Length: 121
Image (cartoon, rainbow, N blue to C red; front, side, top):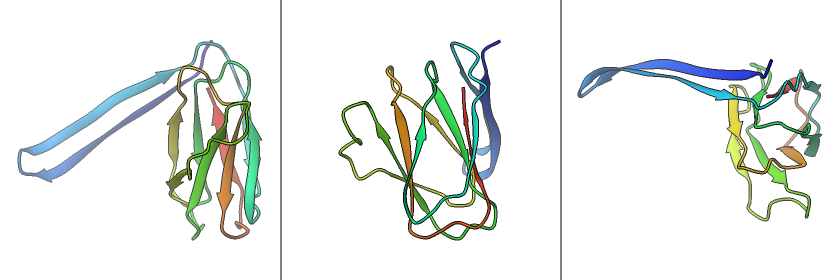
């Protein structure tokens, strides 16, 4: 069975009132079952993307105080962009473009206490 990631929520206090978000679902094309628990160190931390992955969920430790930057390697070296800044202590979902990267790179400005979980679907 292929994996899924479902996102849902709500937002109140809007000029129009209350809004329900989702549920939005990312569905994998195959069963991946790969989850990494990583102790991030200062600098680049490279994670291999399993064949067939369509997205990843990055869950840093709740007590982490360092923001992270994520970039991708599409087989010809890291993406030349500066990367995407993500929260260092809240989950992030990244849906890959049509061709998944061969690896993702999580950059941390310092060693992170606790493990960061990276799950692929």
